[in-house]
Image 1 (cartoon, helix red, strand yellow):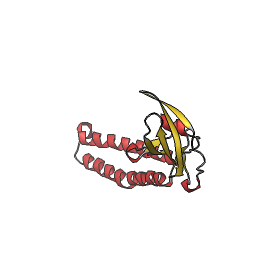
Image 2 (cartoon, rainbow, N blue to C red):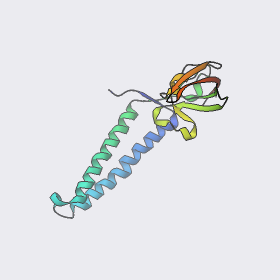
Image 3 (cartoon, rainbow, N blue to C red):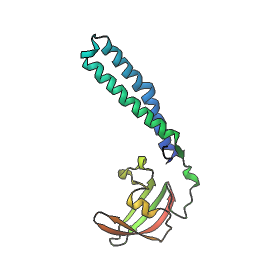
Image 4 (cartoon, rainbow, N blue to C red):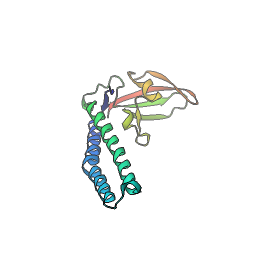
Length: 158
């Protein structure tokens, strides 16, 4: 059984859009490629046909994967999140205790993580350490270079 995954409404909508594109655009394109390759004659020596069939198999796997993700997806209403403690989809401002640098991250699901947009996975070392913490709590995070201490300065909604 697949595990339940949590998504923001935006991420859930993007998954649905991706699935729709695969089913309604990519699938017909592959079918056309197979039909064109089939029209070229002997299928036993037709590399185009083999490539199109392989692409079709990969596409069907992607479709099945997305359908399963959507089946077990749960959407979190971020407007109703508590800001007393760090939760999934909380935006957290933290201070590196040793350097004094201040960072702001939003904790998201694994599929939404994007460090360039300050979105880190709740399953990352920092994300795991921050979950359920409150303002003024200090957390220690083990990273490849050692251990870093962060103080939670602020918690807001996404």
